[in-house]
Image (cartoon, rainbow, N blue to C red; front, side, top):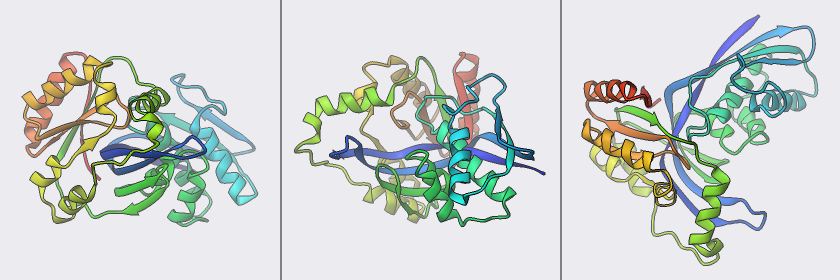
Length: 286
């Protein structure tokens, strides 16, 4: 038996870093949104063990979150069955789009399907938390307020309908570097009090208020990353030029997304960026 599961990318409509814990992890406050942009994970029952085929794009050992997710699933069941996993990559890697975490989440869902839905979605999300901070949200999908290290998830209602263009150009961004730069700027968050709140965005999404939604986007990392990655600023300018109503970096970058009320304009922007050699994707919020 073989099952296929989409591994949907995420964007951060809102992302703030509000503190640093004693264990060194940072506390975040983020409104995350899954997109139709997706990798695919296939899982097939086999004889014994866990095998992974990435088409040579990524390592197929325990450094891959797909393998780690499979091991976490079997550890939770206290039993295992042989499985061959195949990963087809579409989501740009190391771009702030949660691709690796999405693949891990899809792996958990695929194994659960093969295992006749042993776990509820919330139970599966709890297993995902042992693999990575973004995995629980990506198991559940949709729109959610994520706090803590990203593992405290409150589902949200999103009535906003829009096209999303995701674009990536230039070199990647190291997330540990980005957090370290924020630590320098805010003195390790020792006395930090954020001037921001996600409440206006959450209210706008629930009302389906497009104008208020696009005006409430925020990403704390932009001020750190943009001076070091000029391609981020250039992509933002081009997306605005082609009619985006709002543009923002996702995660710690360097992926940039534009929100468009006009689907035709979103497609024109995507086509233009692709012709310029940029990795660009016309997507939708899920």
